[in-house]
Length: 464
Image 1 (tube, rainbow, N blue to C red):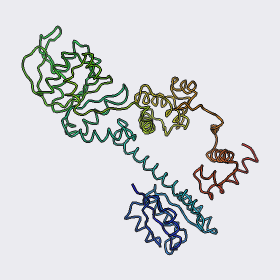
Image 2 (cartoon, rainbow, N blue to C red):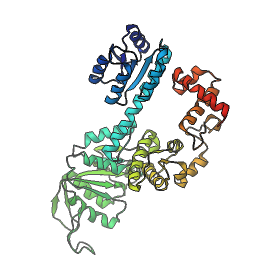
Image 3 (cartoon, rainbow, N blue to C red):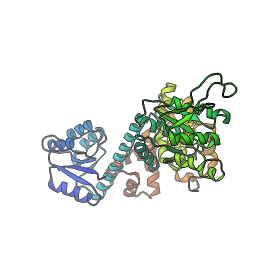
Image 4 (cartoon, rainbow, N blue to C red):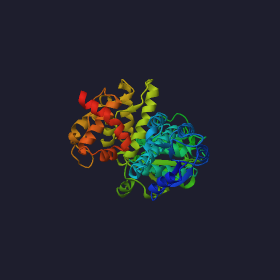
């Protein structure tokens, strides 16, 4: 998707410099010469980044910035200023400008600042997408990885139909949540979703639970009883761990899928019901077919549409949004104001293999919420096995040895300003004092870096 940049400047040469320095990056450009013209364009177009001269005829750049931020807070605004307008530029930063550059504009510096603004815009959009997902799915089915986006697309396509769906994936990946979403997005969502765990029911009771029974059909059958299929009439039945179903129950299920008819155990009376079947398994059904444990004809009846959910460690992009959704849930349940995870916690979440998948992540966040003493979840509040993994792993993914000399340690209790200055100091050490290279690595403009250097010098002279 092409990003749109609005260039606001009454000087035609300055507008041309900005436009030509950014051409070739796939941007679309809009131009305005006054604040009034700029605000009109902003209200009628989807603008990602604004470059705005502070001195404009009529409505000045500061007022344009203020109104842009009122209309759309996440718009990235870069102010352009003369050398004698730095104080005004600082005011612009306070009002939400992403950065400012002094004229004459250095083209390389402009490109760096715009690239960073585009990245900030992308991150803001990503956070908004997370919020929309959390609001829509209530933490039930979340993700932004390519795999999850494909799953969302399949759900949207298959939900309105009555086709059977087979969901596969390891334990804890969220198969039941996928089934729930299919049902809720279907035309049957005003009817029951009946869930059956085939693995938890004894073989002797499974058929009775699914298809019902009549009085006297077996010991303990003291009255007629409807099965889960009849209870789900008009709605959906979710058969979890379908691979554990007995041969006899498989036969009955196959007949139902063929004819939408069933017979209660002990009865020869045919009952017709309208039920959509969703099945799930964590085992390889094709292997079970080869071992004569699962019917091949039933397998193909079930997998009209198949949704394969990858394990969590194969889609690490989904970890932050899942963790945040769980944190929101348990913040409400515990009555604590839990806002976020410490950076080292999230780093550990990315590196941990999650053998229990999403369910293990959920339980980890729940445990942390119970023991959290502040708004930020820290390492000491994680379950012991997670902490032990961090202590014993010793390597990052890919086998790269952990080298403390390549990391910056910020003591707990440091202010944000102290942390920022320490990062700048270590980066300058890394590049042997090359300020331009340091600014590039840090994602700062040179003017932003130079504004911080006096405080850095003072910190180094006085010590921590």
